[in-house]
Image (cartoon, helix red, strand yellow):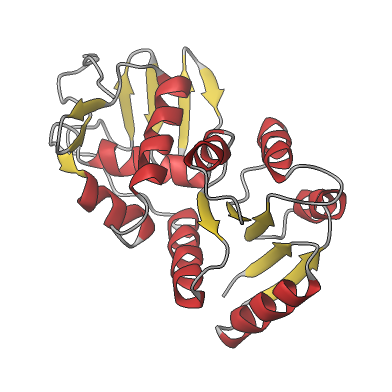
Length: 236
């Protein structure tokens, strides 16, 4: 089970979520504001954080951005009463791993947490067909599957856990178009309610690694072409 940080200034919600998580065997820590959350996350022992967007001292989205800029890749699930799709998209673009609107179904929250934890905890990535050993070169990229690291022109690129999970699945299926549903099931454990989340993660990967790496298969899914060194045109 995991050590979970619940960041929210509503003590009632913290109590309810904490009780729910403890029943599943998780250890729970809470923080009522962004500064205390930042301190807790900097310790390095938090495995996943549930982060309210409306904090009393800092906007939760700004905190996500700051943490990612510092190189902190702790999985973050954003919780908010905001239902505007632009807010959701922004949270994912800034580095959130998932986004859940309040009020939420407890079972859905648990399922999302378990899916993010499952993907971030995997330490033995699957080998890509056609890769040389545990490394795949698609100039200017070098993807090290064992180290779970990507280099662009020799410089390491920081990826959030769920960004890596999406990339890993596409890489291990290189040369085969995978459906969005298949990808969502593998990464998030469900194909329901995470389509926008998937699209935002692919968008972030394209910005970080190059627009031509991941090809969109219109009406179906995504593909990383099998031809060595070939970058395909992307669609949105």
